[in-house]
Length: 56
Picture 1 (cartoon, one colour):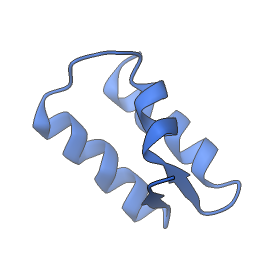
Picture 2: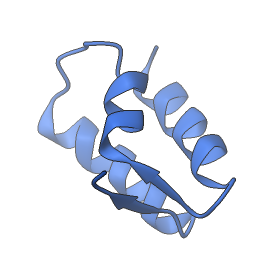
Picture 3: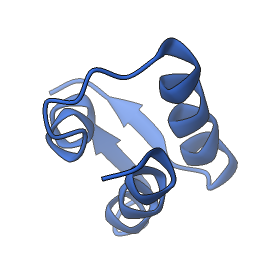
């Protein structure tokens, strides 16, 4: 899955209750090694959508 696809899917999941866990986000990344800039893009997209990332 590409970074934009990961971002879109993460937003879809997070919009259910305004948050998502790090585990859910890691699951979406599919064991891909992401560049720090890619991680920042995903987290920024979630933040702009008003979705919080939280631990378990």
